[in-house]
Length: 425
Image 1 (cartoon, one colour):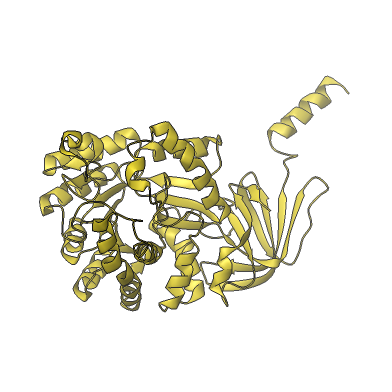
Image 2 (cartoon, rainbow, N blue to C red; image 1 turned 30 degrees about the vertical axis):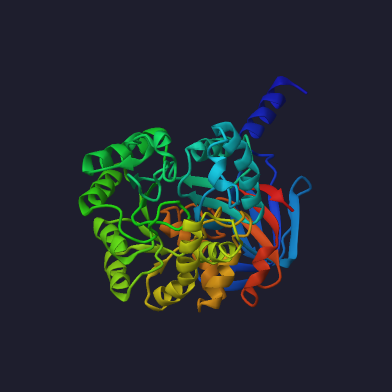
């Protein structure tokens, strides 16, 4: 073979002329934009992207990969807009922070990330951890480890003694006086510094704890925690960077302050009133319900000693209310993004949110849309993800059975592709 032929072959290879394609034969394909179910479709994937979707079963060449999902339902990769990827619920959780170094947290997070991906969730928004979540995001993006695509808040922002103050519950000589460098603020100047510090460290989104919370050992679970000028400063600074602000909130007054400041989303929203729902609709604020977290916390609170007493009391009182709030918000037309608070319950069980949403009155296809196309809009990434269309990133999953008829089949994901790479088959 002469040099000219070899040179031509090299050029063809460089241009991807011999790149392998993947042909997926989908017996049922859910179009999450139109909420229609298409029958007998072929999806062609090349170079990490979907290149075509067409009716009937087409075959590729001898070097192409064929994936037979003729007996399955195929969907876009799922998205969970509220997870805590660094850890998960445990009766030792409240002392683990005194024993685990960052490296320990990172190693524990790796299987949780992989479990999330294997359950069909190819994209997640991590809303608060120690900062290891940023390193994990980077490792996944680099292909060093397996896991979902992560958009992370890094460390949450709270006032002194607030839900995300990491020193709550410690003896006084261990409390110290944490400040904006670890997300603890007092006043608008601290607020701006905390946002800028989060950006410096690599956060994709800002998370604030606008009210008390259930699982922290702080006494209050619902009262507002920021003054209006502090929330205003946080949102203004985040807007300067072009990133969203998510507000953890259980109590209504804290929600209203956060909405007035211009946060992108309310997380949990347990005690949301009709007035707050109207305010959210007028401001375009999203709601991320996390029903699974509320239901799980209430259940675990019944186990003696699982939570500290102050946490168990809040979990029993606040947790069971979230599903009813979701039902009212859905009926009132509040914009809803799918999010579960994974970590409060075991990672990999994210599908349970679908079951609770359908129980509360949302049709199954609409619940699936919330976790795909709607969440892509929520994240401003609908040009890349959220549907199975030519030109989109090839995040594709499959389940056996018909989730539009029995949403519980989302528990058992039989196929996972992310960025065109098959992780489960």
